[in-house]
Picture 1 (spheres, rainbow, N blue to C red):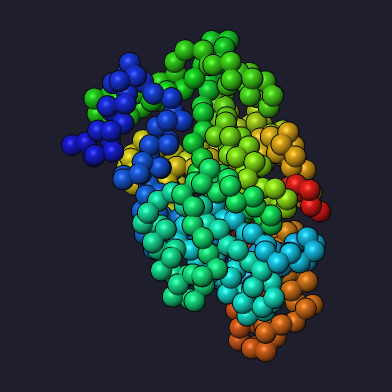
Picture 2: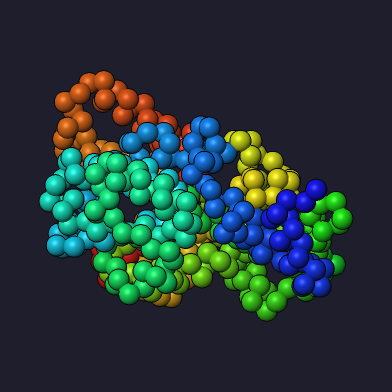
Length: 367
């Protein structure tokens, strides 16, 4: 029997003549307001959920990001109001770690912070508010349903995201019979399946040419038009400051390798990776690696200059070195210090999270 979400998608397929673009299928699976995977993501995180992020290693990740944000506040001249915008805040744990560190370690910085969370889903907003209010941090935080709702705020500070862009819906195109064709999703009376349709639109063809995707028979190209749209929005919202994007992926020359003909798309259910994108519709996470060139190139067009690109190991190690040199309350508790070091090793070790996660830092009228 079809689930409610399956019925919704089937209705769209029928109304569209029997097929919808893969991008729309992924969007419905993840972001349907009632039945999408992220509509109830607070129950899907951490060790007991479906996926595990740097935040769930412990408070160290948030503390290091807080130190980074404090340093950028200083670089911008310690303004009386410093905006921090987080999109993809999930259950609010990272926001609590960042604000908690600022309150304990740098009270002047904490007083200057105006923390903004962009969150479209009501259940997640409520979870975030409960966590931050319970920690006495709710007064420092504002919520916005979308980037458009934030557009009038004229952000001056840092806009950051952690494992957000990998969940943006992607367009799929396959090189077949000497031409690029769009990958669609159809219902075969039993389940959803992929079907390669007509030639791709000029918009997709332009992206394929820009990223020099190999024209090899059967090659499946993942095109990140939604990520490009997002970067345009971010650039419009940010008046002055930095954009920090942490996620897994590569620049285009590495992303579209001939050795990767089927791309990176995968589903995750209870921490297990599967290639079956059409099972457990709305119950499993769908994700694809990020083409960071799409973010950097679009950013450049809208005034965002790349100032740092590399892996999480290098990024966090630099912050950690400065954190340890500065001392602070960390040194006063040996047991806490040992736990901090263990968590840091998990976050930064090249064979764990340190190499697979990348960091892109872009500046607009700032550093």
